[in-house]
Amino acid sequence: MDLLIVNPNSTASMTRTIEAAAKAVAAPGTRIVAATSQAGPASIEGYYDEALSVPGLLAEIREGERAGARAAVIACFDDTGLDAARAMARIPVLGICEAALSLAAFVARRFTVVTTAEAARVPVEDLVARYGMAGRARVRAAGMSVLSLEDPTSGSGELLRAEIRAALTQDHAEAIVLGCAGMADLARRLSEEFGVPVIDGVSAAVKQAEALAALGLFTSKRGAYAAPSPKRYSGAMASFAPMPSGTE
Image 1 (tube, rainbow, N blue to C red):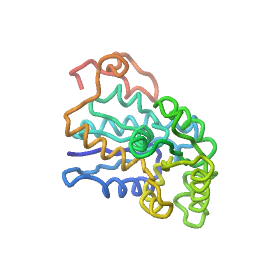
Image 2: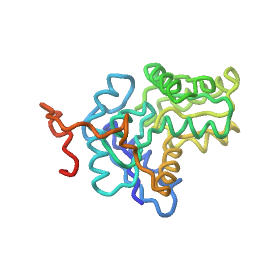
Image 3: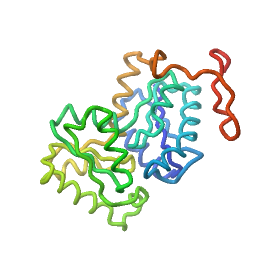
Image 4: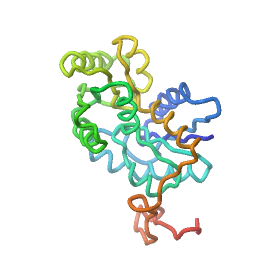
């Protein structure tokens, strides 16, 4: 099966990190198709970046579904555009926050999400509550930018480790969830270092997407994720106008 993984920011080097993490856990019959948004911010750090990244993300998912992908993963821990993508697509679409939290709940009663900047913490806290994990998960910000994860001299690795230590001692966390797709290559190393499960959302979403495809499941088109009604869209959004069923 082809599994589409979309990086909704426009930094291609981060897509390569995400792609490598996905390929490392993919089943032999899964082909990872990684795509970088062609329209949007270089990183997603807060509500403004998130909103402006959605059109580029949707364009990549639309093209990936047309090309035959059996499922799609949105590789941003804000689960950027997830509801819109599910309304647009018939194939299963997974967000890495939802995937990581659900997987963490299988292996720990209490866990902490460690994300990047303070601007990212509140959106992730909102998702933790939405997914029913507020009583089990805390969220910490390590005080770094997303793009600093690309720079080995930035000190982001030590900032991340310091926050994990605090989560283990102060939150009494039993597992750690890495709250950024740019951390996807660190999970195994950090798990060995700290002796607790460390969950990367990209890997979690890949395995869940494979399961959904194997079960033949698709996104329900009844209710919340019903296909959008055909109508005219204007200006830069004209190409996103929903078409009548069967006309694409």
